[in-house]
Amino acid sequence: MAKFLLLMNYGPAANCDVPMDQWAHEDVAAHIRFQQDLGKELAENGELVDAQGLASPELAKTVTYTGSGAPVITDGPFPESKELLAGYWMVDTTLERALEIAAKASAAPGPNGVPIGQPIEVRELMSAPASTDL
Image (cartoon, rainbow, N blue to C red):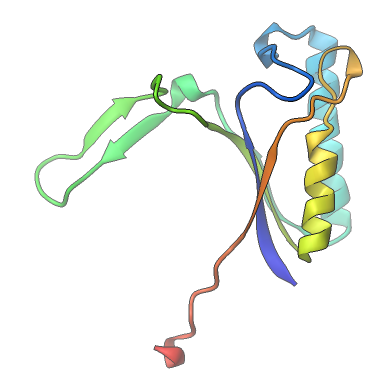
């Protein structure tokens, strides 16, 4: 088994290009309930390590520091930003199962209950070598 991050970004999806803040209240509630149910399923299966939704990109900060002077802290997002992380799941499972979970997450309901087809990026976590391996 390995750990995988399943990453969801803000932005248009295959079946939905309407931002969530413009959805009907009941559609937002159904989407959130779907996410909660998925988290519960993964926890019950012993696969869930962590899952979090992130605040909107307008609340993001970007920090740059070169090692001297004060760090530069700017507000985000910026027009050149193509992808902004909306949330993630960290799971401990096989690659095949991580892909199944990503497919399920991609089909979260959107307006009128239509599966949104949100791209979910699946990335395996790298393992650091044990200190005796250095």
